[in-house]
Length: 271
DNA sequence: AGCGGAACCTGTCGGC
DNA sequence: TGCCGACAGGTTCCGC
Image (cartoon, rainbow, N blue to C red; front, side, top):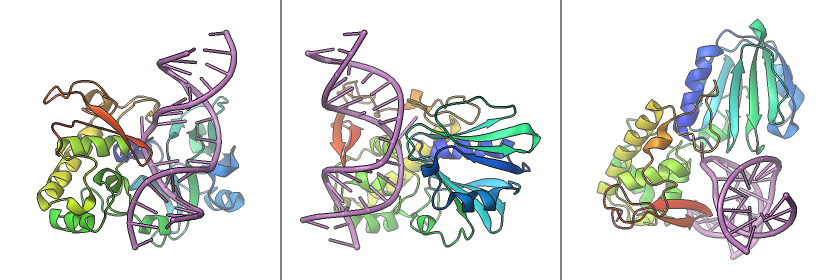
């Protein structure tokens, strides 16, 4: 479900509520949500005070102490809900944190792909080590991106989804970025020119900034911490627009399947 | 090494 | 109404 703008929105809102809250107890309602040992997870996090929340790629990092972190991934349907009051039963609640001040942090996840993990040494975590460029990294240049993409024969669409190249993009924004950059999604990585790489970086930063400004995209069930919706879905130009006229040339947007995922694009505008 | 496909799990929607 | 297949914003594993 959530990509960088949605995760970043959640992180910002959690930072409005959680810092200073103490974790009084943890109720694990679905075992598979917790990576590795549940007792290890509970024992290390119970009693800790949450300092702040960070983001790397699509991971949420809850800082409790220098050597005490909770790393979360929302996958497709995970969400964090903060409540200042007692909570009712909900079938998709997977883990509930009782916090000081009678408040609760709830991890809710319909499809159970999302994960929570206790991490002591964040720097050495293999999952974080695998992450590629942050989209706004100043060291990310069109020359470097081109060189990296040119080593690959997969399509640019699937390469943009690869978190070890650029960290944070997903299916919606990959499609929107390629439309903005006027690049066909089936272009082979090997054929990406330096000018196209430049356009990818520019469009990526533009689209992600805009999406962030509107608190992300709420298509089916993305909700913010306070259950409000993001509004960037009102500004999508190709994603989910199959057969609708392209806003630039009016020819119908087409939908294709790449690596088992839908891709939307304009055959006329994207070369 | 890196690619595409299957799998993980649950819910919704559209067609017949 | 009911059933069935397609589809969903992600990642990991596996075989080639």
